[in-house]
Length: 76
Image (cartoon, rainbow, N blue to C red; front, top):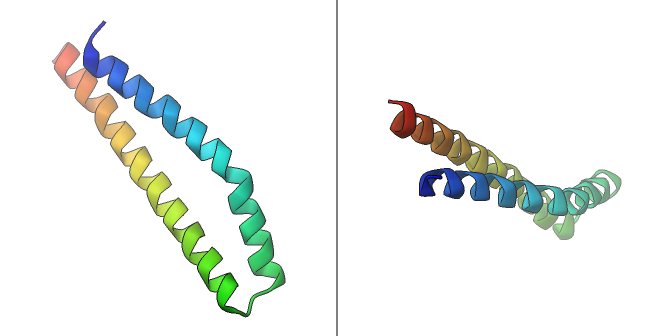
């Protein structure tokens, strides 16, 4: 198999593992924010949730790019 395929598969699998391992932590932070909407700690937790969403989006975009790149180089 091609090295690009292994990099793509590994990147996607590791990303899913990280995503699901952090999911419950983000849910707990969101529950804390909804219960205590005021305060500095809520602001810090909100920023961490925003960074998590942004990094998850970036991971998804890079994953799609790697898949397209693999198919383009393998079948193109």
